[in-house]
Length: 314
Image (cartoon, rainbow, N blue to C red):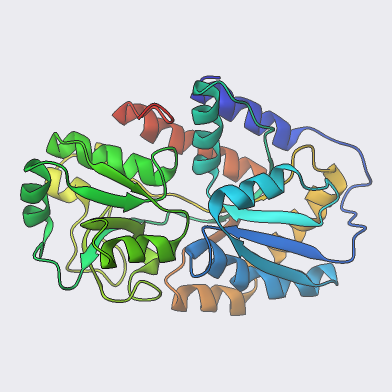
């Protein structure tokens, strides 16, 4: 399945009415999965919105951090009643489906519920003790060959950042795969990788002892005023890239359950206390409905097309 087709089908499933009374949720608890393990941006965002959603829905909303693939597989097999949702990056999901299709495997598409954040940046980091002190030094080391880079996988949005750097430097990194943030830090700390890609949010919060060399947004990341972006060092806006977070449900989620959770999330997103907490955490909270999420997917598709990125074909 081509990437554009995957996005089109993704949007169609999200908008398709699937029975049940509008806005109804007949479960006792909602489990909110955060892919990537403990300490990730997804988990932080989930913990930020879960208490408010619990109040609005009138039931517990439990946040569970899991490795990325485990979280996705759990959601793929979840019940369509609203008892299980996940905070995830929509483009990573689309890339995962496309990569699996390229490899001859197909998976059921999840139900999109609502967009939660605006763009989040990634950061290229090295251990504080590393002799690589800045981006020029990293570029020089990479051009010598066989530089090992730890990240969450070429078939994710992290892979887009990898591909961008490889294009700019004319190199091919040695991939060191990880399934959670702790693995990324361990890989560099144990000498398995010279550098790692993490979310910019993670640096200084749950990735101690790491130095950021570069970020990937259109502008410098808040709090990283002395760290340049890839588009800045290249002078090429094609290399400006961020990812968003959104809320998803299992395949063929009941329309009533979907709407109940979406409505609760929109109310929480408008809560001044939640907005204030998001600002304090440097999280670009901006809840939007399905149409906003679809527009975000279209934007992400254009980013992928600009650099010729093909997931699953490393």
